[in-house]
Image (cartoon, rainbow, N blue to C red; front, side):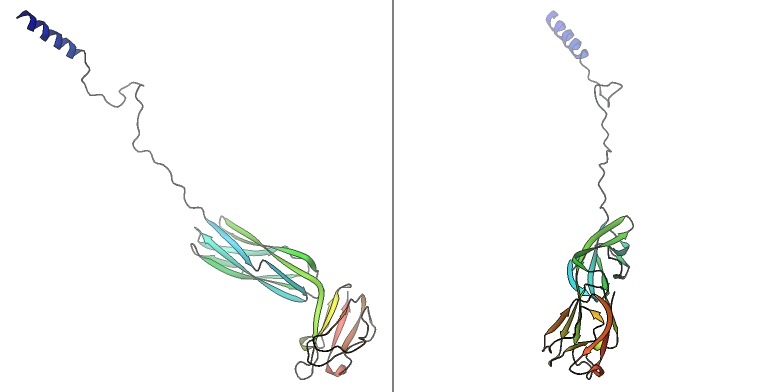
Length: 245
């Protein structure tokens, strides 16, 4: 009987040496880190923005004309109004934005026009003039450029328009151009015409011969003022006043 008693005693001692209790979450010690099961990973919200496009990007014209650019503004995660403006035009040019404000829906787009009027005596831009067009709203903005090239030319057509009047809307009117501007008088008719001048404008002589259809008379006035009209058909068919500045 002695050997069995010794074995039983040894088993009880071994069992008492083992920690069989329940271990709680880091019970006062630093060996086991706390674990927070409620950690939230933030997700970035979409960024509100607008984009602006100009069409056409470039245009070429002459003095005394008007050109139109179309502006398209597109929304990305943005809803609300944006204001449109155009800057960069030389003094004397007239720039009109219509409308000056558009309202965008989420993911939508809106259009506006930018009209640029260059007077006959305005500043030419033979190498191109950049116009900055901007769209601005609450916490959003975008910009784009339009380039307008303006050659140092003024063009007027001669022809029997409106029952014999040679100069159309310019009949009886006044053209003002700067010294050094090329005056291009174009025959838009199916018969010949000849330009008459009285010598009051430097660099603008009486035309030597009549010009046929699609012909032109090109001069570069330097100073003075005078009238001109068609020599072949007489002053009664209309005249134009020319002033050199």
